[in-house]
Length: 143
Image 1: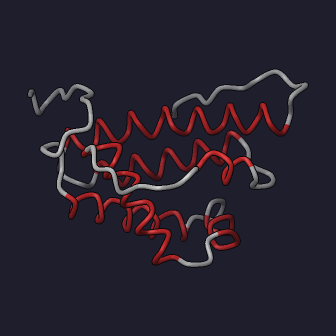
Image 2: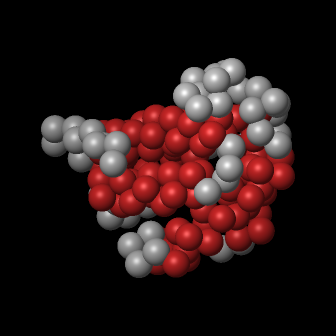
Image 3: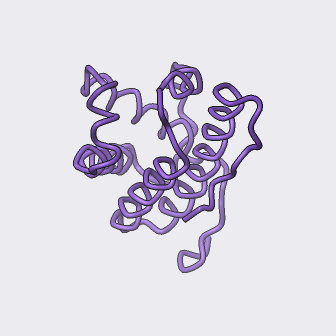
């Protein structure tokens, strides 16, 4: 695997450690909770941060390492949130990328960022289809 130009890989336990995933999740949410646009949304809708951290660590462990601990349905939870915009999804992606870039693992960074962009894009498209079925769909720019 070329570390200077990583390629997207299938989930693999060698891609990163559980400790790296835990650091990623905690660092990202520390950043997101302080963000003026995202922070209020998270604070209004996440009531048990410890449980949320476990859920997100399990989610990213599944996506990156191929573990099977994650149980959940993120799509309906996101579609139920009021007032989401493409700018909020773009901001989420920016903060996520800032966090992955500080991890010191370029393969983790590339794979996590690629997954985040695809996941964010699918969530945003589904959100629009459910909330605004008569409007033309707007894709994320990937900023």
